[in-house]
Length: 355
Image (cartoon, rainbow, N blue to C red; front, side, top):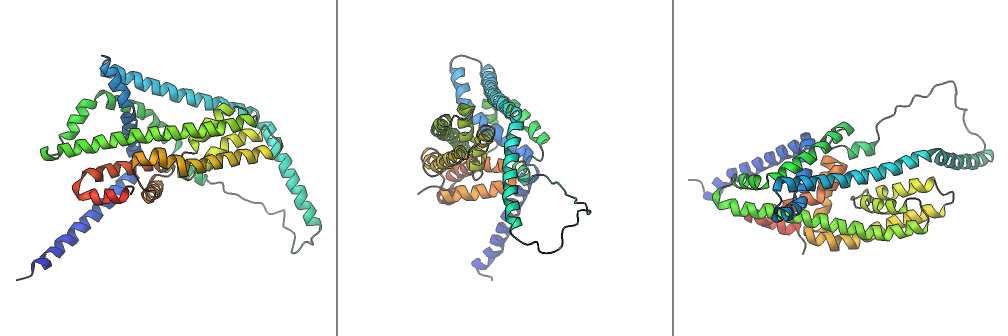
């Protein structure tokens, strides 16, 4: 008769194999259905953030459907105002593009003159290039654009995805009570309280995460904007908050944050000082935000340690590109909320959390 320990080994190996296969299937589904999953995740997070405002209106005897409609419309108005403001600044930049190109051409001419002066002092080695042979260049799509749109696929798909989000948010807010009850009914009776705690924890985490990032963006904007105003940078009151918001994006935040003010500065200044001041300001504020403000205002709210955040960014960035980087922290924090409320996963939740 075989020993009890020998009988358990095949079952354990089978269980581990099934878990690996299930994880592979989930990752494949997240990759190939990324546009749908990203749309749903963004809609759920936005609904969690807007739900308290709808609840306040509902307590003021405003029907829930009307409160949901008002909140969504106000959100769309705020987004439209932001996009319109940025669009106006882009048009101003395009109008100044000829002067910008003249400045760039002048810099290129100086570099060519410097290179020509160096070439005159050195002998030419080897045969001269054959000018009769035509040069064929294959222009590929920018790797940055491929990275940013990896989870969506194209600009058209991104536009369609964004158009669906307001409708999904409105339906989620309007039917919250029904969706909440129907979701809890998916679980056995003895696990419904646990499921309710998980969903409530995710909603609270998302709201605190958004609030923390808003505070970080406000502090960063208050530090950048006065420097831009002192440099007499055009549209400094818009470029300061814009650079602060863009600098919140993990890893590529510095490059994205410094790009708009530098483009405006190229069309406005001809000396090197303002460029260095703008780059140094954005880099310094980003360093302060990442190492001081974000751990204080955001890290304590999501309760994730630095290793977990880094691994989450690596995974979701690899899976969905730039959009995955933006969503990596709230998704990872949501997974931690699940682990904290499931008995068998609590050790993993403790490993993901802070000391």
